[in-house]
Length: 110
Image (spheres, rainbow, N blue to C red):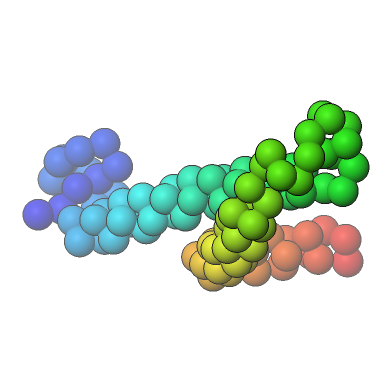
C-alpha cells in the first residue's frame, strides 16, 4: 500500500511506499530521542560543572564537606562522556544535511 503526504490517495501523483514512511518516522524518533538525551546530559554536565567551579562553593557559603563532591565529579565526568557520544551520533545522523548546507554556503560565498 502506498501513501501520499496527506493519507491514502491512489489518484495522487506523490506516492511514498509505506516502508519508506516507517523508516523516516523511526529516524525522526531516533533523532528526537538523541536530542533529548543530549539536553539531559548537557544539563547534568553544566550544573555539576558550575557546582564544582572553584569559586562557587565560597559564593554560596558552603563547604566541600556538605556537597558530595566525589559523586558530583562522577556525574560530571560520565555525563560529559555520554554527551560526547550523543553529539557524535547526532552529527552522523545529520551528516547529509551538514554537507548540503556547506555546499550551499560555499556556493553563495564563491
